[in-house]
Length: 348
Image (cartoon, rainbow, N blue to C red; front, side):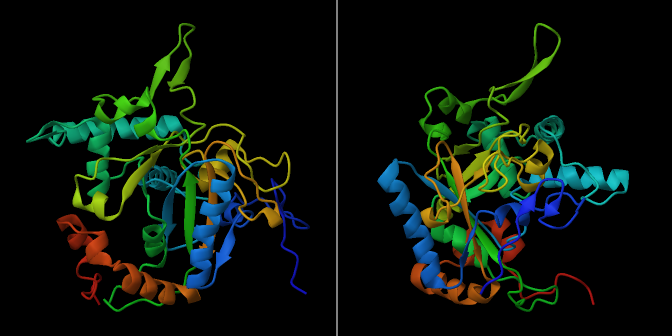
């Protein structure tokens, strides 16, 4: 008989054990995920989500794949601010609180101002909106709050099983499990919102910190730190078109309304939520036989891809769909970063 999964409890760790360590992202994911062990499991996961959700309420999803199943769902800006805080305090990340929205906003302000000083806000086609500036910075490896996602689940799967190379230039073994996320976009798509559609062309950030008449502060929009939004840019750039790309954006989670498990009234603290994700995400189980529900709003579902399955899935995606590095990153920045994996990256 298989061992009964251990249940994580806030401030106590797993049942029967006293633990003071901060929440690790994988502890949250494992309370909700399913496992993909082969190509058939991958197809079943994607098709099962589409069929089940379609029977209940119409809606669509964007997808994200990562090569390490334990990695937090964080933007590059969130990670860089957190790392910087830890280094300045000479502490580990476990001992350093994750960034707040105020810290992200201040860093974002500085980055946009510096990009303006470098003249990167303007092009031969005119001034770029803030969102378009952030998209350009994101694709050229600068830290932003945008999180890359795809409208195509199989492209997300390719990212989850992508071939890694070691510093000597040789293909690395698939030693880490990968992960796929499906994020519901119902009522959260900027492009389809009558008020937020203008964000795409706004020369100022639509999300901002404001002072109240009583001397306090508030965030605009009011739900900025409670709900994640999706922006689908026009496929003018080759990489966005090739990846069927979109972006997630939202404020750093701030309230105790994100489930930690399937148990009723088991919520994440604001700090634990930020340790797992830099945007407000609500994870749910998918399989109705295991407590899954058709969730309101923007549910998130996740699957872990076993390391042993990566090679066969990667080969299937390359032969069946033609996905490969040159097709996923069809531009000079992509070639500069990924085009010569066979050359060593570290000296002997």
